[in-house]
Length: 160
Image 1 (cartoon, rainbow, N blue to C red):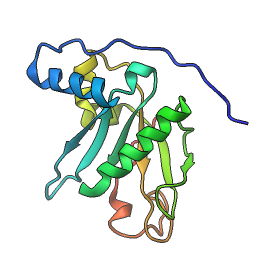
Image 2 (spheres, rainbow, N blue to C red):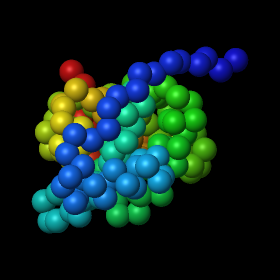
Image 3 (tube, rainbow, N blue to C red):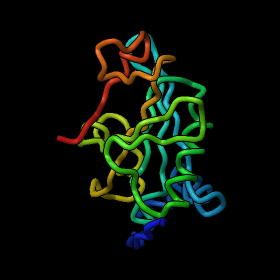
Image 4 (cartoon, one colour):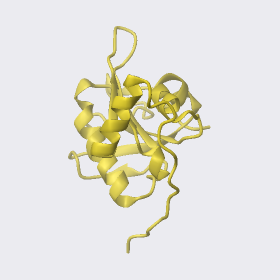
């Protein structure tokens, strides 16, 4: 039996007069959410995050690690919205790959260092973030001491 949860609708962007945020708003209206990607460098991993879930009272999603993760994050976001409720902290998410992804409730570090444009878009830091984590080829996550490189290097931004 599937549990239905209600969620609170939040306001749209506060600064859509800015062309950058106007394009984000248009994309959200057309597609439901927007993926924001940030390229990595020698010291930082690339990452993707969503903008648009907050409007539905759902957490924004963050995935750190690879340029190929946009498809994964779109799939997870679609699943989140179909379920109409956040994933549980530590929940395994099956169906995209042979090995499950993992959801973690992320803390303020995620907002301060990764999902900055969400706060700018909505004009608030009062939104939730869930980090989606990919396991290594043996199904181990970065918090497992046996997790393989480079998966073990992904920072886990757990809420404390």
